[in-house]
Image 1 (tube, rainbow, N blue to C red):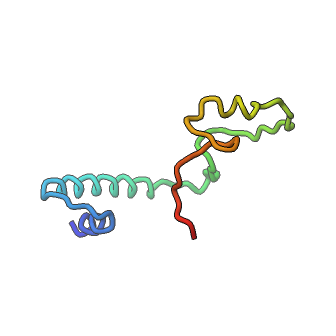
Image 2 (tube, rainbow, N blue to C red):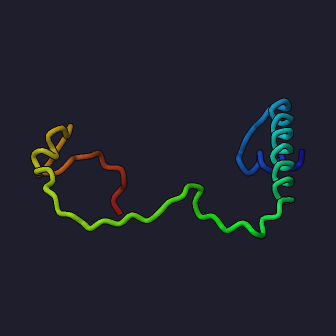
Image 3 (cartoon, rainbow, N blue to C red):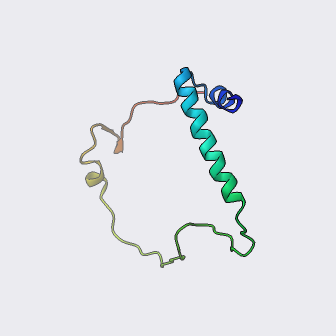
Length: 93
């Protein structure tokens, strides 16, 4: 139960007694599963950097025509001086 209390404190959770018991049970199940995984001999298993087989795909950059300024701003709810106008989200320094 100490582990649950510690996790609750770290996550700033306020759980009822029933929720604490459920979390204790779930945490215990997780730790048992991890203990079983640690018993496996992985010495011959190559490191995996990604779960899917991937390969690098490179292509040459290709210049293509883009949108005109007018087309890009066509659906803008607000614009100003040829740019999108958005609400200020940061204070001036």
